[in-house]
Image (cartoon, rainbow, N blue to C red; front, top):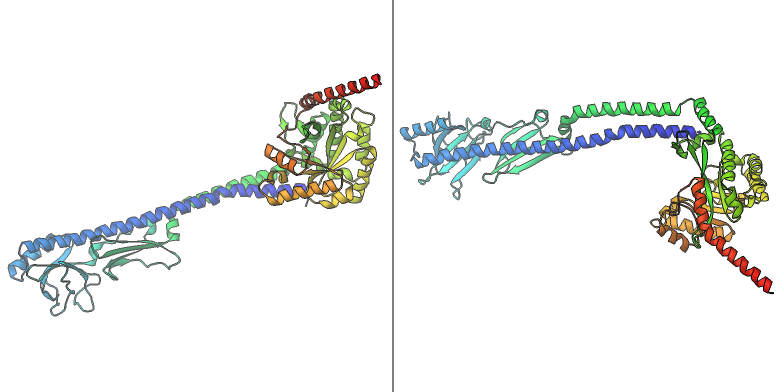
Length: 536
């Protein structure tokens, strides 16, 4: 797969990721909101149910207590009639009656069909109030879920109020939960006063449980996680449609961008080359032991006629794969010679590093271009360093070795750029006759935090020293990194800690300001030597 196709696939994948990221994040937010809101709704259902149950029981106790205070604790017709009136005025009591100390019914108004001889509940002598469920299997005419509240009077008998299960009126909650929720109200330990719905399986259940502070009441409410999410399904559908639409647009844009007609791109590059819009910028290379400037690396910038600058990342991959890189390299070498010629002719120790593409080593045209550009010029061959990157493989290593041998014959040096990050590794150092190893920025950045990166730097420095090669650290940005490199024996470095890539005029000003003191020292030393010679 070609580099351009790799970039196209990468761009499409990025477009898909950017388009779908809001969907994934939005779903997470919606689900979290739905679960939080749903749990609050379940809690509210349980609270409302508990409040109603407590209100029913409290009212029943209040009616029975008033009846006791009024002395209505017998089955005399008058007392029974008044108890019937109390039940009629009550909101929740179906009937009120009298039960003896053992729990056997004595009389009710209105009377049940048949209950004589059957205990309604087991009285608790330690408490004035007993709350119990009637057992339909032992108590005739007792509907399932019927609750009785008994008030023990001073005479030992009980005033009893009967509450029908329908009085509880179970709360369904929000509409979207009605079909998927279960409500259970218990009296005592496991006695079911009322229930609705079917409890979901354990793995799907989401619920809550609350207990009364005043009565033997427990309310349990359950639902499923899927039911909770029903509240946000419409929003989720809208979000999905929007995310898919945006993804389609982004993917379409990526395809359009990368399927832009080759001739159109070619026209832009050709016009830019014809107008000499590609400019060399120069990043200083410094000796970190002496603080002296050793030279620079030439980098390319595309400056349009309106002054806008195009980043190399936007055009270099196409320039390399399309073959325009050869003409661009020739243009940049000529401009570098013309712009830095005086500075380099006056300072023969300065080095100029020039980046080459892997395709430059397929034949010897680059050697011819070097000779045509620099022969008999202000910048000598031995001031030139040509960098071959390890990021892209050389197609013909033996041919590359022959090209590098010709560069060496001219007096030029060759550096391995991005060492340790790509295809060649130690094999390139061994096979190509490399003079300088350049340590990639990724290892410099990781030195302090990554033991592996620090070890790699140590190995590269030791290898370079043993093979009598130079070492240059790239991308140095902090004083701390400088100190670490100095401790490892690295003497040359470049990066923002010194200066970014500069246009020729600024680089020349910087270099001359740094070289001036050294030139003064040299003049003074030469004068002293002449004086000694004259005296002799």
